[in-house]
Amino acid sequence: MFTGGRPARDAIDSGLVLQLRGALDETERLLQQLIDGFAMQAERYQNTVMPGRTWMQHALPVTFGLKLAGTLDALLRWQQRLREMRPRVLVLQFGGAAGTLDSLKADASPVAAALASLLGLTLPDTPWHSQRDRLLEVGAWFAGLCGTLGKFANDFSLLMQTEVAEVSEPVAEGRGGSSTMPHKRNPIACSAILTAAQRTPGLVATLYASQIQQHERALGGWQAEWETLPELIMLVGGALAQSDALVREMQVFPQKMRADLEITHGLIMAEAVTLALAAFIGKADAHHRIEALCRQAIDESRPLQALLENDPLVSQHLSPPRLTQLLDPATATGSAERFVRQVVARYKEQRDEP
Image 1 (tube, rainbow, N blue to C red):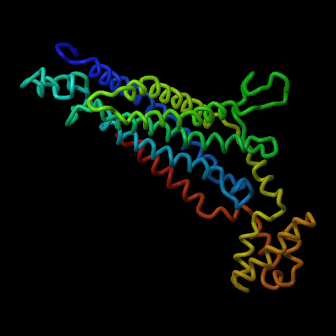
Image 2 (image 1 turned 135 degrees about the horizontal axis):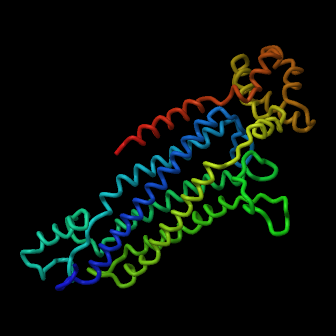
Image 3 (image 1 turned 30 degrees about the horizontal axis):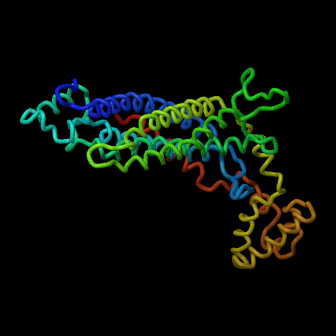
């Protein structure tokens, strides 16, 4: 195919693009499967209330469905980027010895067009052997996707900690056990995903460095891609497979999520009380008063509601039934359900796109 004065670099680059096409096809299949799993679980747990955490501490109530919908939202964007990227990167490399196709003379254009058609690749405006931005785009896409998977795996593993225990990885014989501690349930899928996420930035850095190509054929930069890009794609493919199994078969413990909402004895709902009180005495004064009662609740290990009901200023404006309502985490998830519905609706719309 690439004979008669056409160098090996044309064959290597176009062959790489053909392999990329197969890899992207399989990646798109795995990604769609993962997206389907997240959409299913986001709907299932859209009303499952749990503690939201900022700076690794309880913040305000959220829902587990919203956490899943956040990952689904990101995955839908990665899917869109993949679809947009394919026409840009699946192109023929055919430039001859120095990128001019001089050996073909007047036949250069028709031969290039025929070759592109035969291989099912787009014919670019110019040969691109020493312009590697397309391959960098592919590598950056895989690394970015892996970052999203890594964020989910990291959060999931934190929710699996013994002291939290709000979720767990799938149960199977010999899975996640310890060779010495029979009670262990280690997050092994999360470990595999996070391992990939730790390694991908360094591989993408190599692709960035490989952009520096000398004149019409590189000395080192081109060759540095040969092992780097396949390794990156295989790592992320493994992370996709692990993520799919994890999200579809995970164990979720809503009762433990609810119990964890109660461990601060109402403090997680202090903001709701503050806002209600602010309507009567102003935001600053309400904040200072509720903050003082929160510190007292911590120092004395007492429920916040008891202190609120016995505080003259608070009880003057907020009755016990009103305080009970304000301190219920189920009433404080804001627009979480709507956010989940919006993402799931976009998933269904995008699912039907060609």
